[in-house]
Image 1 (cartoon, rainbow over the protein chains, first blue to last red):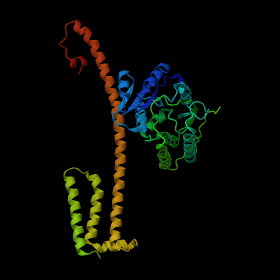
Image 2 (cartoon, chains in turn yellow, blue):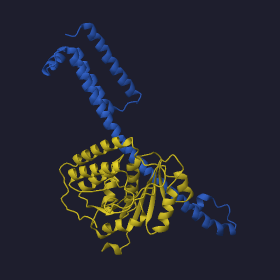
Image 3 (cartoon, one colour):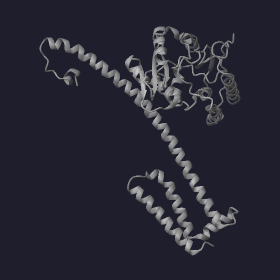
Image 4 (cartoon, chains in turn purple, orange):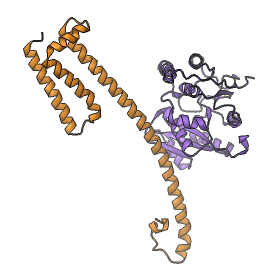
Length: 250
Length: 145
């Protein structure tokens, strides 16, 4: 019903030292999905990311201090809220997320069947599947989120997400720091958001390094586990009642 | 009982403590809001040094045998409280800085866009004016400010 109206969509691309990838990702985005606005959030990069954005006259905001992925993504949501966007999509600036799936991710939001859509690489088990140890870590976090919120989300660490206007406002005010992806799901469920997973394929990174190295993974698991628990506790007993539809797992 | 020499030392120490805090407050190097807990700690220390019997009684209520141990435990408890308050202040400031940085980023983009639109306007208004000889028209006038 809403799809007839002109819906403003913003694609948020957080970028920290992504000079190797950003040009390719954005040029691809501009050529393949020109109907959507995009916004690069340069998170205090120390390499030439800013220069590239400037030279190529991309749409970007430049954070003078490195805030980390959470703060950068939130800056995008603040921008989206300020300029009245109806839907915001966040995707990584390293080319892992394929814009071919944008339409799939937007559909549930346009139809009004979901509030938060997560692009999940594990539903169809196609494309880049990450290493085995990481998959174990992800399934532990997934189980933990199910335990605390009652919602089964498989790919809890996916940074490929789309949210509707209501959640643009919520995330603009309240978005977790450090490793925000799993925690943001808890935030969404606690605000009675209908979280839906949509199958996507991801590619292995085209360049640069993952923000999570092997050494950091133990710290990551402890930090995220605690963050999920604290996040769940901070919302008290306000448990989401609405039962959202799940994406068909065909 | 606390020996009297120690009491004198402690009184001097507490006085020094207050003088340092007041000095910092006078220099505006400390915000009174964040100093209240330090002042409270100082006041408690002062009272206990002047009336040690109070300390002995409080310590015995908690079941601590040795007076000096009791004193140390109280000091540590106060320090933990202050540290926790500091952590909470740091966290709150962290949040505020985050909001500011995001806001600066968004404003920066807006300024850039304004600048380009002004430049475009200037370029547009310049060409016909120059042709008619109005070169003295200043940039400020062109912008309509």
